[in-house]
Length: 212
Ligand code: AP5
Ligand code: ZN
Image 1 (cartoon, rainbow, N blue to C red):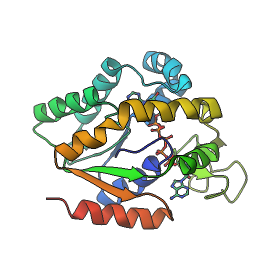
Image 2 (image 1 turned 90 degrees about the vertical axis):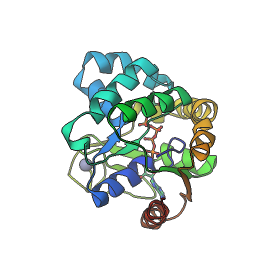
Image 3 (image 1 turned 90 degrees about the horizontal axis):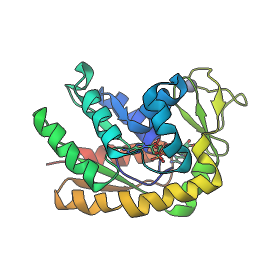
Image 4 (image 1 turned 180 degrees about the vertical axis):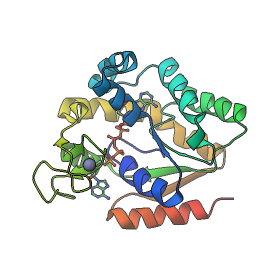
């Protein structure tokens, strides 16, 4: 999946992965789990994440290589937040080649900048299950408590206004070129990612079914 911060990649990836019975592999989630677990990887990643910058490719690529080699990824997987620049996309092709796999499709979630800022500023993430609520679009039944699992909701460190702005710049400079990269490879599917969550899921499923 590719799309700007706040496009709804995590939200859609969670639903699609469960419908397709494949694991969702989210580099952002793996980094955040390492930050809260206080691991060396987490310590290295945190400084970059808090500034809205990308974690260096050497760290990210090795982490993905290890994750995709795990047992549960052998029947397919859905990548959320990786690759994030052309160098990562080229490394991904090598990793998949070594595993005798290939990407079936790249789903681009198209949303304008004003809407992604609204989505990020109002996001409240669950500490336990990772579900993203929104104060306005998807408010929890009980304030501060996840509907899914009863976990505690919090605002991500990188969802502050300054950092949101930097993440959007980084997306435009480094990640947006992937759209042309995958269009060239003939596997890009772009969908309108505005409107109700379930309508966007339906568009995603239609786009993915269409794959050649
Ligand atoms: P990452 O976690 O990948 O963040 P991101 O790409 O900025 O994406 P987000 O998680 O912010 O947004 P999303 O598109 O998943 O939206 P969501 O579904 O939550 O990365 C974080 C950091 O980790 C990076 O900055 C970097 O430092 C590092 N990193 C990660 N991967 C890396 C890599 N490959 N290389 C290097 N560094 C890497 O939705 C947002 C909100 O909108 C929610 O509140 C949700 O409830 C709401 N919402 C969702 N859909 C709708 C809808 N249809 N209508 C209304 N509201 C909606
Ligand atoms: Zn939860």
